[in-house]
Amino acid sequence: ATPTALLVGTGRGAQLGILIKGPEVLENTRKADTVVLDKTGTVTTGRMALLGVHTAEGTTEDEALRLAGALEHASEHPIAQAVATAAQDRFGDLPAVTDFENLPGLGVRGTVDGHAVLAGRTALLDAPLPPALAAARSAAERAGRTAVAVAWDGAPRAVLEVADAVKPTSAEAIAELRALGLRPVLLTGDNRLVAESVAAEVGIPAEDVIAEVLPEDKVATVQRLQAEGRTVAMVGDGVNDAAALARADLGLAIGTGTDAAIEAADLTLVRGDLRSAADAIRLSRRTLATIK
Ligand code: ADP
Ligand code: MG
Image (cartoon, rainbow, N blue to C red; front, side, top):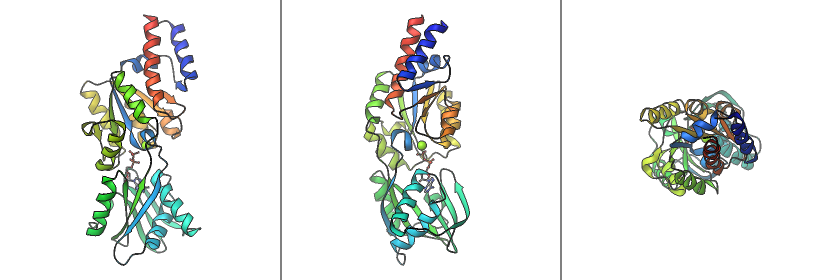
């Protein structure tokens, strides 16, 4: 490989909105046969909105939104921001949180107005959801929305429906990656039904959806694919994607994502548009073909 051609390749990358850590990265870009895509913030915009509040008997929507909103105000997760923003829009100032704890890939907990409040996946709950809330949760997930369970003082009392939109260019980008011979895989900590619904929207079959994966297990997922003999490119935006980006044969960070992801990756897609991932593959193949 002549250094000049590689440098020309990295220069072209910059023009295309692809920042490459070093010329040697192009070689791994060319070899990738599998592309693992994080869902939230990568395939979807990550700008979530609160779309519904369901409560158990004896609980009002306002109570649930006020406590959950106050708690989520202390978290930077896209889901948390959606809930906190909706609560602020309705109530203005929110009560303070003490003993706040972030449980990555699961949710949050803390004390608000003297109540021990919890918001997140149902796996966090001590008690099962009452039937009406369980039904609301299934309906939300079948519709591709994330259901956030809210409990306080030991009892599940509400389900919040949160959703974000698939980026307008994601389906086209995934089709381009497939046409380049890569197999797209959707990887997420979110619920399987939600994940499959998003996957269907962008043309990824259910068998290539890996859902309900805890942040620390995203790396293990990449390693498992590598152990199957695949050369893995991973695209992600979050703090919880950083280790997997570093472990993948090629890590691509979404430029609008977190610093942790950008630092761990080999390549940054400045525009946050997944089509740049296909551009990167094409660029590396062209650059390396010129060299041979
Ligand atoms: P992704 O892999 O799609 O980026 P995460 O790993 O960040 O998602 O989160 C996985 C799941 O954990 C979310 O879909 C949500 O159900 C739950 N969760 C995580 N953080 C929060 C939070 N602050 N509030 C509510 N739910 C949360
Ligand atoms: Mg993400």
